[in-house]
Image 1 (cartoon, rainbow, N blue to C red):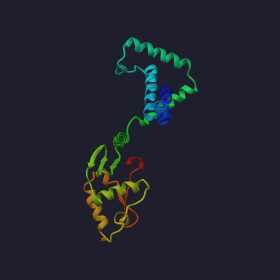
Image 2: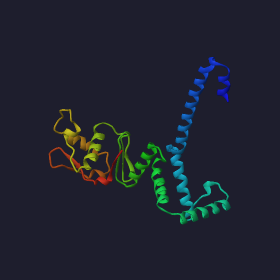
Image 3: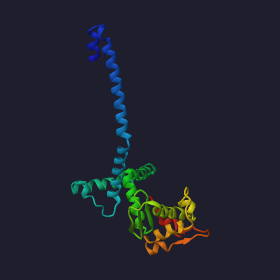
Image 4: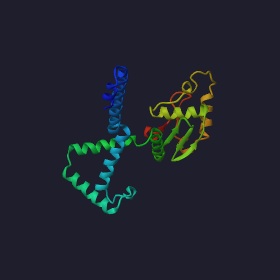
Length: 226
């Protein structure tokens, strides 16, 4: 109707008609994109996955805790029975695929920083050697043993951890690649680091086959570097 009214006013307004048509096309394209994002955007997919898994948990979980849904018990129990009956009656490959896909989406529930924090906490819980490179922080046997360490001693500990994964030694060329150091530099660095490590950890560091080299005898599964 708006377009007809503008056209009826005469030719001087043809430019306005063209402009209106272009703006309408742009609005239509923006709306289509918005609909696509609402249906398939990352956040929306995560919400849908959470809904699916909540329903599965409610229907088949052993004594599921659902008070956080803030729904009346009567309504909740009715819906749980309904979901369980439908899933049991119509369970097929498509349904199981959707559930599996929903589980896969959960990796996006947390941001990268939160995922990293979880990974660090899991590593600490193993009791192994955990090194946080950006903080100069080390854990051993589930407790902090170093914090804010810098310089060559921290580099040496990192090298010991990294090389232990490959079952290889750390030598002068690794710790001092561009420096001409005295023959005792490597031994001095290790002795200084040794004094700051728990006995249970430094006893796992042995001299390598070659002179002035050291190796950490710790299984790679017990070494976590972040």
